[in-house]
Image 1 (cartoon, rainbow, N blue to C red):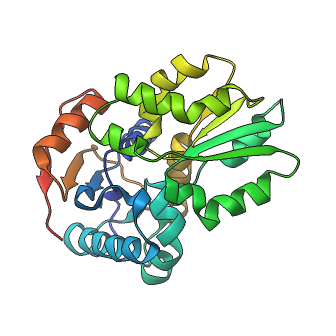
Image 2 (cartoon, helix red, strand yellow):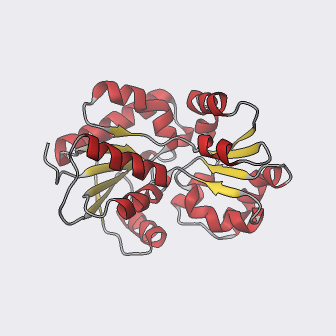
Length: 263
């Protein structure tokens, strides 16, 4: 394995760009391929069987066509339902994304935290296990948020549609003792400003981005596959290229060019 091989970063859509942003900050010399399976978005409303099929197609493509040295699943739902099978199938290092429930439980002073995620993630065995493992003595509000992921996919991060959905899902949080809110979908960090307007400063927002970047850096060191060259990022989508470029450029605040992939 060559050190200049790229790291594959995956999401069903643009949410994983929040993870890519943290990876690029911490790993300025690594090459990245960001892959958005927008043809099949939203993953949060798909079955486990469908998700496994989609993910195998994606990893086969990235390994076969781009020779990736590591795969980062920048999607909570895909991690919850497919990472076990992917680790059994592939021998490259894999990094998953799970809701940051552990740090939230360690950080709470009121003994109450809230987690917002896609409907599939909120119902998953993974999130139930995280709550069971780290939520002893803690009240955990587990809130599934239909359609919130879709608004970010359209580039809507601070408009009436987003605020209406957020007020709907966050009302119970605002009226509770929660002092930590876990952003359990990689799309949601792009909504920090809008969420802050609703909840104010009394509730700390927690996501997994920095932890995933640190985990990725650690695995690069363990496997001795860190790159020492100049970084570049390449973007692919199974959906509409122009729409992806427009939304990704808005979210990352720099011009993004993408290529179409048919799987």
